[in-house]
Length: 82
Image (cartoon, rainbow, N blue to C red; front, side):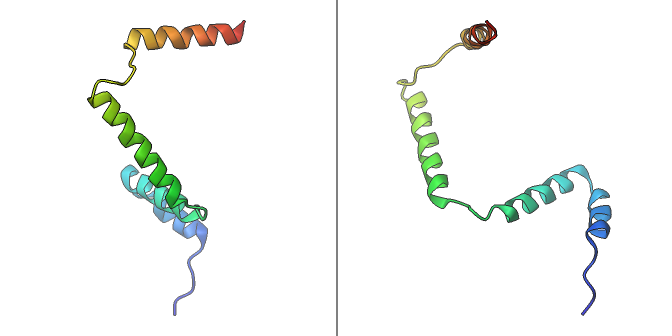
């Protein structure tokens, strides 16, 4: 059995990868730290997204134009700044 490689050796090798491979590695490492993964929350978000898509498709969603959305955001920021 070979000895474990050091974190530094692994990091040096990982940093030599192309950007898209480094990004994939980062995601995989981050996912490995997510011990509290909540499948119920994933299901709830999927249902929420599906419901919102359905309201847009059937025409019942309340939508804003880009100009109106930006104006509303600017007004809210202005109100916060006083």
